[in-house]
Length: 427
Image (cartoon, rainbow, N blue to C red):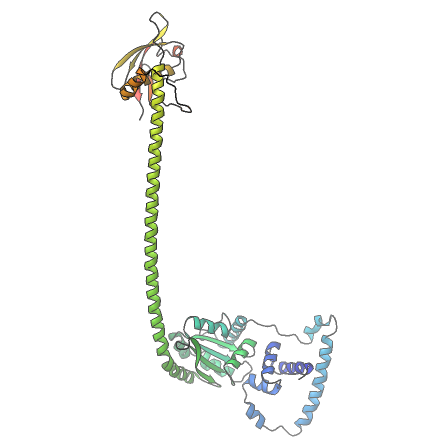
């Protein structure tokens, strides 16, 4: 058929049934561009019965005249559509229907059903077309029931009331966890599905089940043409009785394997988590040992530097001033209760008192190191880059005040010209 003939056939089918262009083209291609057979398919009429009907007397003559007039009008309309800028105004002459996605088409059909018959209907899958419904059924190793209807069919109202809105059918399908989808063959995707499952009359119901033997979906039952809830339930019951036991055994065995695999995975996860905790504990223990070792090494290093500094300090303490000089005469009470009387130059810093007390404590705390330093003939030197910290504080007796190392002795009435100094060890 020529291109213009195809366009005329599409226009004729649209004029008769008001279907989208893409659906009209798909249907006509399936019927070799025979408009009459396409109309009969979409309306659910039998083509054989139609061919038996004889035309009314004189109808052929008037039909020829009508076809001639319609063909001329359509060619004129096609000419106008090719005129520049005129497509902007073509909606006035007849707008092309917008293509609907499978999900939109399913929701549109469901909305129309609810507007006409209410919302108490079968629970339908509306997230996509029949292909998505089948994909979900295969993934879940389940059962699906596909309804192919035609809104142009005279049986649509009866089918909707007796099947789609039936409480028993709804409960039957829900109890068996059957995924249900309904489509209008006036939409392209549903039409393609009806051709795939050889649906020749509408409404049609196709029961799809997963086959464990084939690892694919198979058709378990189908109904074509007018049906009621009893016929549908009986057909589905017989089909399920034949096919469902093997599917349920497959599901049970698969669930058992999945449970075993999940248990093994959980055990492996628990084992790996235990290993991870052990590794973490070992890591923390190692880090703790390394930290303590570093602390010990640092402590030993600082002790060594402290002993070196205190050794140098012990031999570097200046001699006590002569009695006839102006000096501070102090009574130093040590932590063990002993007292030491000592004079200090009045212009010296209090730090000199700290150094003297440190040498006294050094002799008590480290006697061997102290004796070795005092008897050594070598010149001792303080360690480089070392800041010594005294491990005690000095307080005046009356009033009790801490003696700051940077203060000058003669500026402190509590120790000059005389006073008592108390030594307190720090924690």
